[in-house]
Image (cartoon, rainbow over all chains, first blue to last red; front, side, top):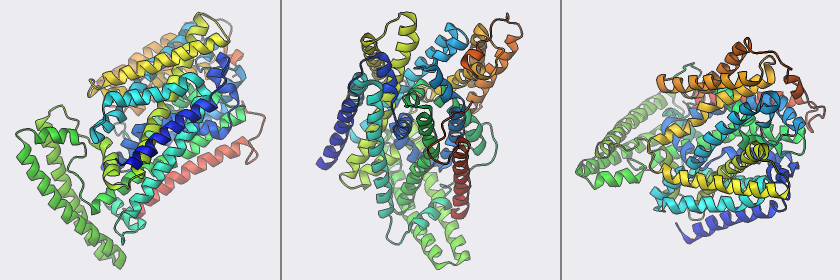
Length: 568
Length: 39
């Protein structure tokens, strides 16, 4: 990294922290600290919602995913606009009318205290573990590619985030989010423009898209229904809808963002802005990955993008074999580049038969180099049996460090840090809010200035826990993937509790609580014993709670119906 | 359950929801078309 990169990176991060501190000053009551003063406009809410779900791994992993697997991951987000509409119609007016500070408050009014505490504790459990991974994953990538210490990285991100989040609460988080989204947008946009610019002069954007499409990297839509296929149109629309409904409707890290709106209208517009922006945004991030893939059709990439395992194999007895494989791969990629050039020239000729023949030769060359890459991965795994065979998370940053100019490298790194900070701040702020409102305020009691300090202590404690877990995550190895799908293991059940609360009037008190426990056990059994893709757990958990609660309600003792108290 | 205050654009909430749905549909069709044309 050049001096300019350090200046850009340091300046951007300093600006985010100071901006958050400045805009978040003046919280005097617990409600103001947690609710952000309830005066946020729709655009601030929308940016804050997008920033909270945007982690650093979004920008490290997503382009790499397009590079390796194509762009089908965008289908994951197709349920989001549908969920935004449903929540705008039913959830936002209800939350505003009841003047709740957390989503879980509603459950006590509708059912009982233990159901509220169950939902709040499920949120605290899964979100606190997930936030640790949120800061660990980019720290790992940066440590491998730049040689930075993982511990220093985790400490830096944690201290920066906690400085403004602990002091200023929800308002500081929202305003810091707006500056982080600006940095992220600038970084990714300029990286995209520069990637197109760095393609050979005669290769237009249209040519680049055909090169990517010819090798299956524009496989955006997969209409085939398959429960075991993680990303297709139907898992995105149906499974994604349930996941997003739960995430945006019942996860406090998101609910807190739109409850800070000055009115129902502002909250709705903020959520709908996210519904409109997220799919195209994710498409553009994936397209950036596809363009990096095209860039490497004309330049030779490394055999394996993660340099850590490569160093290990080169230090062992398999080093000569790996070196030979690298030589074969470089020659294969040189031949592939020539075929790519020939394909582009054929496209410019407009001769359909020539284009088809050139494309076929290009695809054959790609298949040969991919086979060599697989051999390389097998050799790496033979030398280090525990090594992750995927280098997806390293592709984009390795490309940035080796191919983008000074200054832009610093800006992209600032975007990566901003992503990490934006999700961590939104999440620890929500963990603090849930601790204060659903545990401390409900079980201990208190208000005013004292509650601000309890909120600060709780937010600080959750930030510290996240950093400690991030440190521990370094030793978890493959369990990290399990933690990543943790959300889907619990989201369906939580959503089921809320849907039962809103729409199944006959279900009372403890019935929903016990239905949720049984449903959660069912989801965990599905995870353990079936191959069903994780997006479907959201559907299964939700429908199981609603179905079981309805069935259990046939045996419950009648009492006053609390649904009417919610006005639904 | 509807908000009495209309949105500042498009006049009614159902119209705004239709625009959000329409954009999703356009995205799905557009992405599919892009993949078909460039593959």
